[in-house]
Length: 214
Image 1: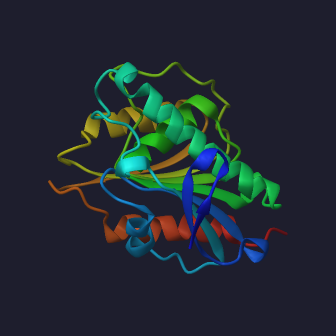
Image 2 (image 1 turned 90 degrees about the vertical axis):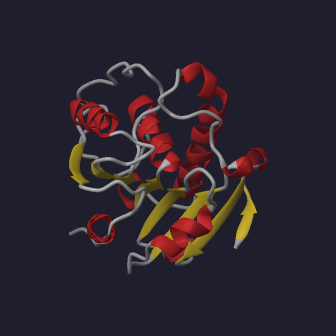
């Protein structure tokens, strides 16, 4: 199912009806993909409502993410705004921050990494599959408690052709410095893939976030 977000950004939705969802997930696809890629990539076995913005032209920003930020700034800001609108919608229908998570692959994981390190959104966790913050230079430190308590699964492949290991590790350090709890794993290989381990670990994180509190 698709619908229109404010300012004309299309979104797809799937999973449990939002009014009875145990978890709201904002899913952000990669370059050359659409939300259907993530929908087919993983099913987490929980009552989650997934809301996934659609990149215009199947790309959130035009240039490789390690190039200077200025060339990607406009697209990246538009992508971040689309994600923030999705988060705001989940808040508006009654899901508190501790019941909202982010999930992205490749370019989508880059968008979410940048969002986390520059905006500190009101969410409880994130699954970042093969991505890192955008730009040549390190981002300004967001503060040691900006992401306090936020749980992050960060996964990649050691010799991924698009996302170098060093940027994934830099992103993990920045998230840790901001107070997040980061589960980092980089598996050997040369392909731009999502491993079964990444899916399983993300499923456990999302199940934890969806579990009733006492």
